[in-house]
Image 1 (cartoon, rainbow, N blue to C red):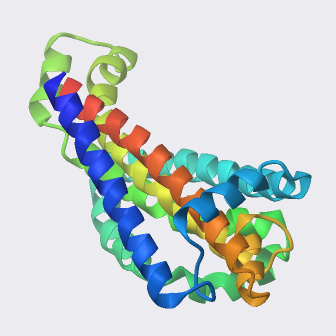
Image 2 (image 1 turned 180 degrees about the horizontal axis):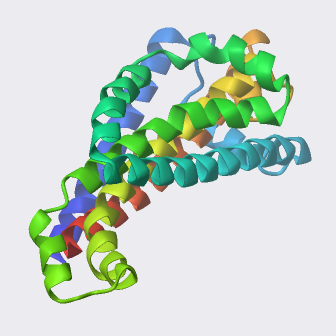
Length: 248
């Protein structure tokens, strides 16, 4: 209980500092750069009452959901396969790490040529952002399984299904959860960037359209909505990640 109260107090102080800095930046830069906190919150709440905003929000959530699902399924499957074959994993891991460091924006023309304009390009751009961390975390989890666990399973004559259920899954699940948490944030980033470059629908399109039309209220409010969603979802995933690591 004491730790929870301390955590709430720390969170309240962080929010207070952010609001003070935000208000200070507004006082320095003026309305041409951003809007003050409470005005931004009111405008953001008002956006949820407009049908057009819900259309953009549904487009982003649909593309994000598909990109996250594809990244999770392909990333976990590829990570497990590379981890099971040690030589393939040793060869692929530095290649994936190098590929992960490449700015993905440079690949966007290729994505457009392959998938064209529309939701498929946004999904693909989200996948190339989010899948590699899932692969690397899953691969690392399989490679670091203690051999004594597998020897114990064989000594107890567990079936492959029992070994997977009672040994492999508990051993790799916490690291997979960590990879999914990182992939979540990067998939969202990829989809938003895709909407900014070549889309007429979505939250990313609203942000870039607000910038191009000098609509500071719209840009600041939509950015705030994205930040609150990302922070809230990432905090929930972080709690799950810590619980899984603790239970292991």
